[in-house]
Amino acid sequence: MSSPITLSAATRQNLLSLQDTAALAATNQARLATGKKVNSALDNPVNYFTAQGLSDRSAALSSLLDGISNGIQTIQAANTGASKISDLVKSLQSTIAQAQSDAAANRPTVTGSALATAAEAKATGTSLRTTAMNMALGGAAARPSETAAGSLGIAGTALAVTLTDGENSFTRRLTPTSTVGDLVDAINASGLATAAVDDAGKLTVTGNSDTLKVGVGGGTDAAAALTAATAGGGNTALNLTVAAATTGLTNDKTSAARTALATQFNELRTQIDQIAKDSGFNGTNLLGGDALSVIFNEKTGSDQSKLTIAGRKLTADSLGVDKAVNGTAGTGEFNIQTDKGLAAMQDTLKTALASLKNLQSGFGSNLSNVQVRQDFTKQVGNILDTGAANLVNADMNAEAANSQALSTRQSLGVSALSLANQANQGVLQLLR
View 1: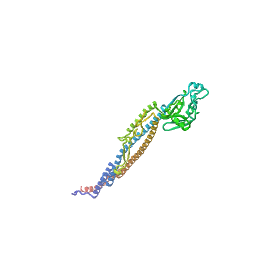
View 2 (view 1 turned 90 degrees about the horizontal axis):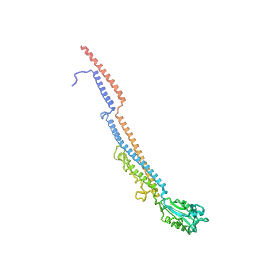
View 3 (view 1 turned 120 degrees about the horizontal axis):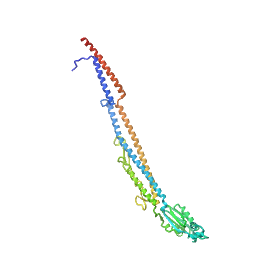
View 4 (view 1 turned 60 degrees about the vertical axis):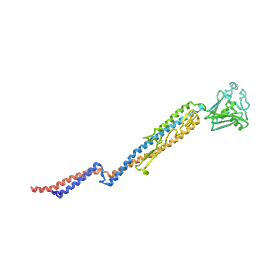
């Protein structure tokens, strides 16, 4: 039913204007309160749903950042473990080097009895050592005297000395007039052993490795002399055993220093396994053989972007670092008392160190990739949030200005309505 009250056209127009201003003010206040110009699909369906899609993707990417961060920490933990294991391997190398420097304590050695007597040395007017060194190897056997240097009497017109350490051999031709001093010089030039005559006139030959065969012999020619030397035919004349040439010498003594270093080596070796076990993060250990998968986007299936890092079960055994023992080595062991065992382990440690460097290089490359994707994900998330905000957020400066304008407009509308009503008041005056 229509109102029985009749309003003037001016009043009605001002009332409609005030209603419009009130509606605009309400919209303005809502925008100022929420900071958005699009609060629902009714405001702008295209912008509303587009912004919602951008915000949803940003939220999905943000949720992946925790997984990416955990991936970074997992790689860093593994890389730190590999770095410290590399330090341990270097310490193992140092231990092996110390053991190698103590090699002389248990090198294969043969020592003969004195080649000359004190009376003979007195007769020659020289020391026992000099008397022994001056004696000839071949010729007719004769003792040193005031007029002669003496001879050991090794038979043959050609003489030879031969040495072998099982891998390398050395042969030097000698003559019957060659002296014990010449023999000592030949052995020292071989690189396989060292020889010396001590102050008691005793000849000692010491190998430079774990085994040694040393023999002297004479024959009708060089070939015969070499054959005789291999059989140790002249060893007896030098007061050396024939077995030193035939059976050979071994390092049958145990070095106390190497024994102590074996314990040190095995303790360091144990630490390799322990550090590897402790290099995990949040339940994933790349040095324990675990694999790490870092997801970079919110998609699934073939569209999913991710990096999978294969772990490696790192142990002393996997690096080839055997346990040190002071004797016969079994499976997974090496004899620290032998030069051969030490040399083999030193080579193994070099290989292990190179392997660890390659492992660390792989971790470094993967870490760089994951960090780049972490930064990329953060930046894309910011771009998506900014894009969504541009579609739905209100311009607060403009809305604040609109609020002032609407307030003024509303005041002016009220004043206009008051003026329109004054005409009706004039009629009221005529009725009084």
